[in-house]
Image 1 (cartoon, rainbow, N blue to C red):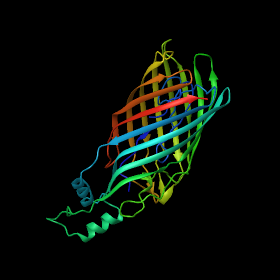
Image 2: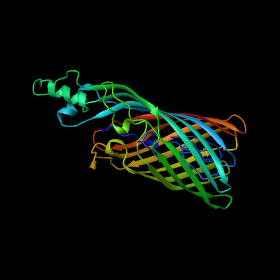
Image 3: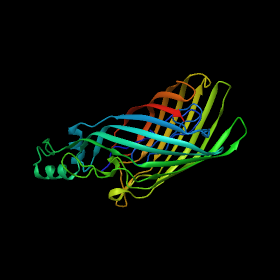
Image 4: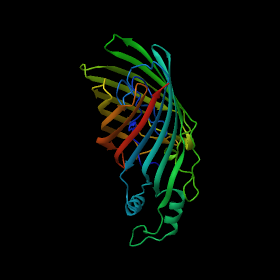
Length: 339
């Protein structure tokens, strides 16, 4: 039962926040197909509309950290009939390869490796059997060791194929359409430390096909300030264990400064808005929500072909549905090179 909404992707998103490629696109997704992200003319998270002029390879590490419940809180939730599952951190590693198709279109392929860490569950079979077998104490559930822990859930995630088509370019402003599909190549068989299959939303993969589409913009506010932005929508099929992640909408607006220099400060707003999930055709009441991030970052051009970057995303607005763990922050580090 998923009670810890991964928001992001962004992702993210957004969450989720996600890879830089100066002058081009790279994409990233979190587990279960959190929406794509990429690099525009100097942004770190916004997809942007600057089409690749040559093939580019990038590596990225995204780390997300969450507030967690105590064991006693999980026991109290169980006494209220709430099945709550949480984890404390997520780490995702991305390898992307992007290439131009023509002067107005490019494609990006991305592989990811995901790891969810420090699970606790008050509602899997182990915990349920334990609570059933343990007598109540003073009218409450016992504080016996009925919370089910799991150290981590690692493995390869789903593969993304993303394309952009530039349909407007007047020299100062560019617009592209974005289209993509997330293929269910990731691992969905990880087990808890007690030997049960982990819930789908905390597997490295999803078992679902996810479609994504939207628009992106790149332009200049002034000679020294460039703007990248996007608006994206994601919807998917049913995945493993009859789980269907909620559809989502995201936006990103990024301003990069002194973008002709080797050191580029970047400031962004990233928002992602999730519908509630479904499992066995029933709405998961402790899922879904809205998060807006403020994401300062910096990129450094090593030479004409290579760049590195880092950024931090702080949730300045976070409204999650039901019993959910707030995200504390996330950070990203990455490297890219043109070929």
